[in-house]
Amino acid sequence: DSGVTQTPKHLITATGQRVTLRCSPRSGDLSVYWYQQSLDQGLQFLIQYYNGEERAKGNILERFSAQQFPDLHSELNLSSLELGDSALYFCASSVRGQGSVDEQFFGPGTRLTVL
Amino acid sequence: GENVEQHPSTLSVQEGDSAVIKCTYSDSASNYFPWYKQELGKRPQLIIDIRSNVGEKKDQRIAVTLNKTAKHFSLHITETQPEDSAVYFCAASSTGGGNKLTFGTGTQLKVEL
Image (cartoon, rainbow over all chains, first blue to last red; front, side, top):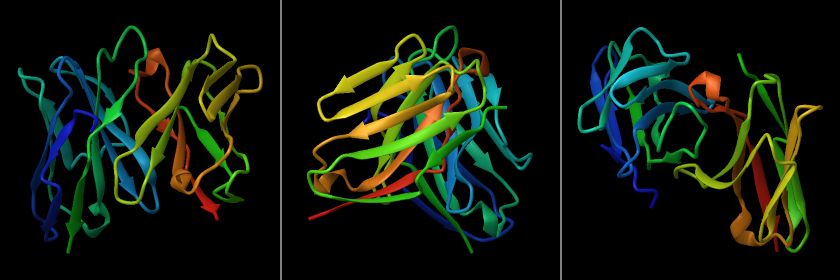
């Protein structure tokens, strides 16, 4: 157990819908990262938040957005879902996230299936 | 941006043999190189990492080497066991990039009895 929690574990929805994925980082970690893992794209970085502020952005679609709350948990919002959005979505956390590179620990993931 | 290439995509070894997985990266600013092990449907688990000021690091049966000049790093697993069977990912990160990880495409390691 990494100490990073994600809910829900599984999500099945239809095209055009909107879903919210939730992540709680390890105690004391200030940075949260979101990654998408699909069969054809591998593990791809989406976005990073550090202490409530957006820190870095990857190939995140405009239909996707995220935020980090004062208690440091984070939510990833996916809207106008398409079949191709079906994937495993991982959240990771690290102590810092700026100034020096430190280890990232991954949560169990949310498996999203868009029908 | 950073690009990480990983080889081989699949690797089959006999129990007790060694396994080597190689990665190359493109961004000379990258300074942190972790390796993750992922079992089917599970989260990636950090197994070892190395920073750019170190050439080699070892942890029991696992070792990682880094050649900054050539921009490549490798994972070495000795005395492989069936429980080592999984997908292994290399990754690269830099302080300037917000610490985001750029992953390789993964290596499916199978340890046969």
